[in-house]
Length: 138
Image (cartoon, rainbow, N blue to C red; front, side, top):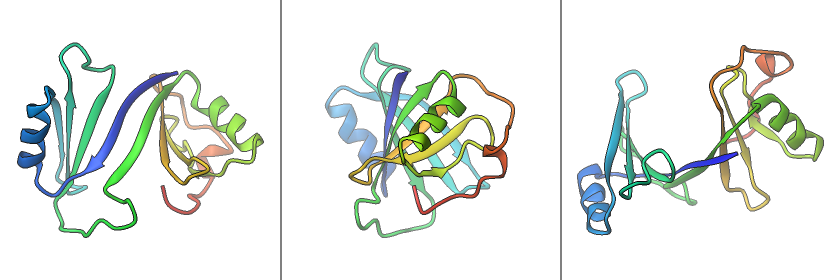
């Protein structure tokens, strides 16, 4: 397993980037999605690119973030997302967003913190995951 990033939602990307630059982080990559109407900006300290990053998520449509929604999730890369999700399910953990695509799943900690699991590479879609519905929110 490898820690990837922590995600926070931001309303003013430029101001947030300027803040993080003051403490030594800089932008390492950016992804814009016209269809999804969001921008992802990844920041890292020198030498930490791809190791431990902060993901800034800017949703283009204004939204009030309540209930901790401005903090998004912790992300971990796993060797086998299906085996990891099965192990969690066997322990009684709800798979909120199953790995239908063989790549990404979301679960929650006992304190309701969202955890994103990302497959190292991609696995082909497989049952029961491919047809499993979402449960709750993540």
